Amino acid sequence: MTRAHLVGLSGNTQRPSRTLGLTTTIVEEIALRTSVESTVFDLVDLGPELGATLDARRAPPRLAGLIDAIAGADALVVASPVYKGAYSGLFKHLFDLIDPAALAGKPLVIAATGGGERHALVVEHALRPLFAFFGAAVAPTAVYAAEKEFLDYRPSQPPLLARIGQAADEAAALVAARRQPLARTA
Image (cartoon, rainbow, N blue to C red; front, side):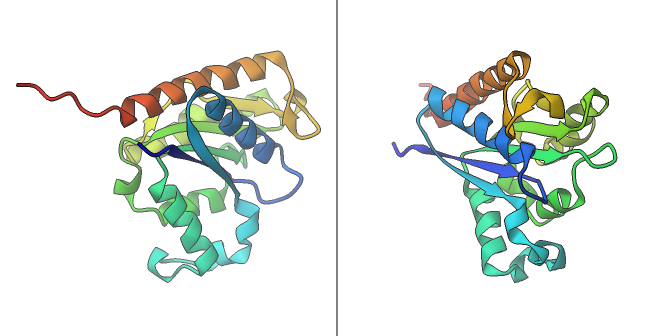
């Protein structure tokens, strides 16, 4: 059996980015727990071509590659910075270009970053419903990280690291369960 492919997507639109640091850390933690190959994408790398693309069939090559990577992944980690109480518009626009069937049953960890605790429910009130629409197998533990929980754009505080570990444990279990062959009954 080939190794599962885990794709991380950081929905940030600038660098340096705490969202990218959070995404990368979650991907690394999942990789420590299960045999996966991983790739992390950064939304800022797509530049204006993402916003100008209204139909995935007409996506420029770099964007088409990201859409294919998301659709073809065995599992995903998706994170967005919080803008006015929700995920970023470009983050949502990217998922508007994804075929809804492409994420059905796919293990997925949701995460977000924000300036303070008042945005913490964005993972439950914005991200979880978005990926429920897609039918993804979203890990029970979502990860929200406030600015004060980072050092040099990487998660650093023990409570945040514990949440990341819990989400990684759940994601690894979801990946393992999805890769197990179905038992045949006689």
